Length: 269
Image (cartoon, rainbow, N blue to C red):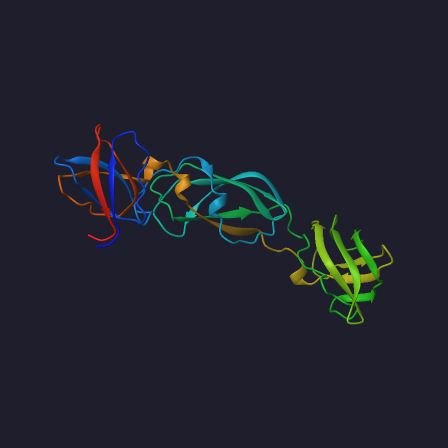
């Protein structure tokens, strides 16, 4: 059978955690109630509590630069839960806060989706001048060696674009380095020509489709964690007769018995 552990516990004791998910055998001479957290998790449906879900965020990309606290309905990638909402804030294209609220019939491991609305920054700059040289496509004019500086180009249909970069010699070729967008701006369109004439730079950047934010939404996925539920929500009460073994492995368990009761945990029956 392998990996046996004995536990003698009563109601009010700390949660018992076997070294490995295990079946539970009642060693007492009478029936005993146990509260079991099934393993693997995700086998018990429950209503998640209001909590942060930042720990469950999956890799994502959003072109939305900033968004105040906004509440979204969710859809499911798996599971059958309904009614959950997620409230997010976005800072510098990253989700800064995300909290769930409401919903029933969810379980740890369920994946839910939100679709971020973006009605404010279409036409922002998304492209990069990183590693561009005077001969790169879309560039005309001349570069000058310079340290890291902030630039606010003129021209084009949009406004408020702000970028940071320096010009260095790479293999004898003047090249833009450390490019970062400080403010993506709004209202730019394909074909706009932006003129850089600061800090001794004197060149034009003609915007292509790849340089312009054109999406109006982006999807983000979250995986529900055990921490999004109360401990009692994702456990199951079993009544084990004397000598009976639970039908499921447990990652942890407690008992409701008022006096000390003996249990044996085993990885295999």
